[in-house]
Length: 119
Image (tube, one colour):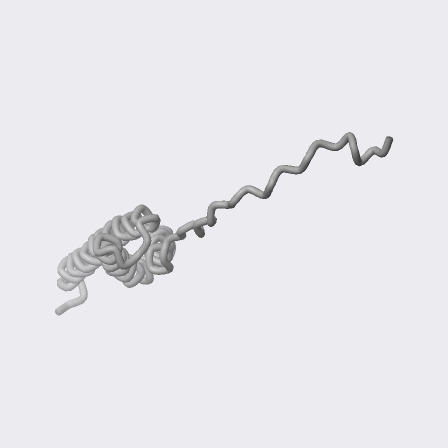
C-alpha cells in the first residue's frame, strides 16, 4: 500500500475575508501631542521656547479635533489631538504666567532701585 492512500482528503480552500488596514492617527494629531509634550518640558529649561510651542500645539490640536468631528480624519487620533490641545493650553498658560511674573519683578526692581541710583 502506498502512503498516499492513507492521507485524508484535502479540504477546498476557504474564502478569506479582506483584511482592513489598521487606521492610524493623522500626522497633525501626533505633531500636536509631541509639540505639547516638548512645550511642557521646555518650561523647565528654555521657557522662552515653550510659549510658541504651546500655541502651535494648541492650534494644531484644535484643528485636528475639528477635522475628526467632521469625519475628515480618522477617529483614532482624537485622544492624541486632545492631549496635544490640552498640553498646548497648559504650556501657554504657564508661559503667560511666567512672562507676567518677569514683568512684575522687573518693574518692582526698577521702582525699588530707582531712588537709590539718584534719579
